[in-house]
Length: 248
Image (cartoon, rainbow, N blue to C red):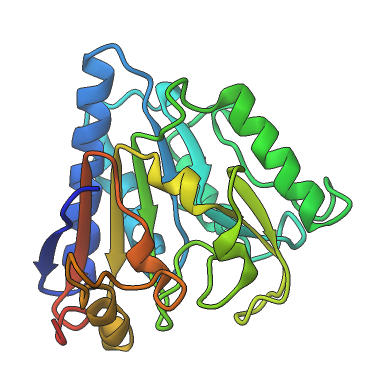
């Protein structure tokens, strides 16, 4: 388990710019070494800002977007063109703009492609087995954090928190609509080389503080604060703005 590092930026815009620059650097370095980078995207307002910044900064970056593989940490089980889907924003904001090949963009099946949420989770797991990192771990996993401390679609007290031995889980009865989702599990998220939390806004400050309130002898229970249950194998960074860091 890695010791998390905290970076505090002035505001959400500065946070998005910093993360976009860091992501482009990591991707360029990986490609220069002959590695095909595989990354996991998140959703939410800070992700939307990040995606726009990636598209803006990409023109001055050496990253070859035809050699980047993209996944999502979670997705809403809704129609493929629904604005609720994280993939819809990501495609419009930067994936299509930068020409990432369709074969390299692995979306969670939507309602038109899977009979139910469990079938969608199983299909996503199969895609990971066929096309995911050979090591089993992604290069970078990006995660938002909810006011309740949830990450991906792993919510406090939800049965999905205890799923083991698989990489994906179908979530029903989500406390945040829409109620049906597919999420990577703690096991899949925790195999990443780097885990980056992207958090902005005063409304997330309490969750951030709770996630960092543990000690080596008394760690935070991931059932209460799921965000505390994910760390990267080599690196864990919390990218915060001043508002979300205000209670640390």
